[in-house]
Image (cartoon, rainbow, N blue to C red; front, side, top):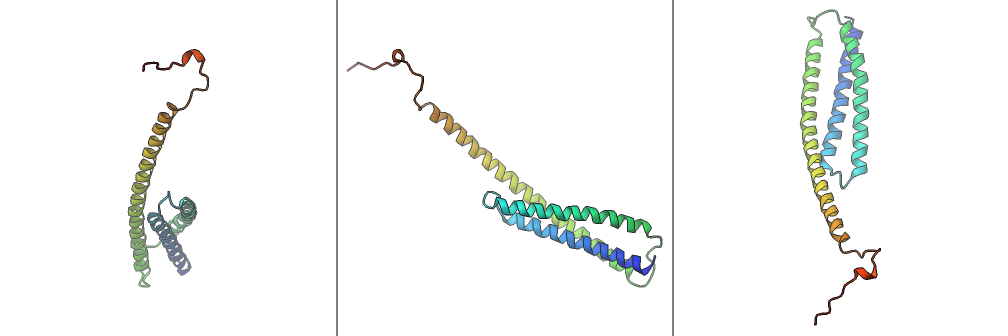
Length: 150
């Protein structure tokens, strides 16, 4: 493999690591916020995170193509293999961190959803209770009784 291809491969892996670090930063920022308090900010974080993931998908296609063109093994003394192994380990560690943070975010969102569902149930029950106290708009005179016991 030419030095240019090696450099390009290192550059692609570095860009992948940078994008993963951005995704991790967005996920950690999302973990700090409550959707109920900051829905617009969380929506912006999710959109930014989605854009990074789209860029990662595009980068993966280019990266796979570059790796498929790699014909020689890593036996040179230029430190190329060490760089690849280091980047691979950094990428793997970053992915593990992203997974952990996303699990926490998912659990937090599920808790918020269940809290909101219980609040909605309480509101609906209250509405049904209030409906019994509202005056009937279609009442008739024969339907009204008064207590004459004294």
